[in-house]
Image (cartoon, rainbow, N blue to C red):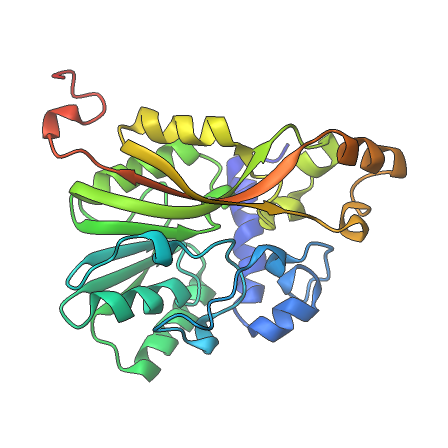
Length: 280
C-alpha cells in the first residue's frame, strides 16, 4: 500500500491533468485525463445543469452527489467547499448566499485553483475566493464558516479523521456540513484496494459507511444524518482491469456495495462540548 504522501501526489498529478480538460473530454477519456489509465472518474457524477448558479466551464464531472442541494444554505451565509476543483459547487452555493454571503473554495491542486480563479474573474464575482491548501490543514482560522460542503473529495484524503477535525474547527458553533462521498458496504477485493488509479477515482479510498459515520460522531458532530444514498455500479469492463475473471465473479456475488452518500451533521453550540475539552 502506498503512503499518504504518495497517494496525495498521485491525486495532484491526475487532477492537475483533469483541470486542463473540459467535462466532455473527461467523459470521453480514461481517468478523465490524458494519462490513459482505466478509471472513469466521471462515472459517479450527478447532473448539475438545472441548478441555479451552474457554470458549465466549472463542471468537470468529478462529483458523486449534489451536496449544495441538501446544505440548507441561506442568504448571507459563509460557505466553505472542501476540494473545490474548478468551482462548480462554489458557484452554485453563491447563487443561494447572494451578494451578502461569502464562498471559499480550498483545493490542493494548483491547476484547479488557477482554473477556478479564472472562472471567478470571468463571472465578476467579488465574494467567491479560492485558496490552495490541504483539507487536513485548512488555510482558515477557527469558527469562521456557517456551512461546509464537499463533493466526492474526502475519499482522496488519507487521514479522514483529521479532515473532519479540521472541518469541525473552522465551522462556527451551530454551523453544519453537507458532504457527498463514497462509502462501502462489504469489503473490496484486494486488487481494487491496491490500485492507485482506483484511489484517484474515489473507489479504493472508500471506507465502510459505519466507520465513516463513526468518525464524524467521534469528532464531536451531532445530528448526523444520511440525507441521500445511491448505489454506484462499476461496469464489468472497468473491473476487469483489476480483477481476474474468478475474482470478478466472486466480487459480484459477495454483496459488496459502493454507495454515494450525502451526510449532514452539526457542530454543537456549547463550546465546552468540543472534542478533548474535558468539561462535558
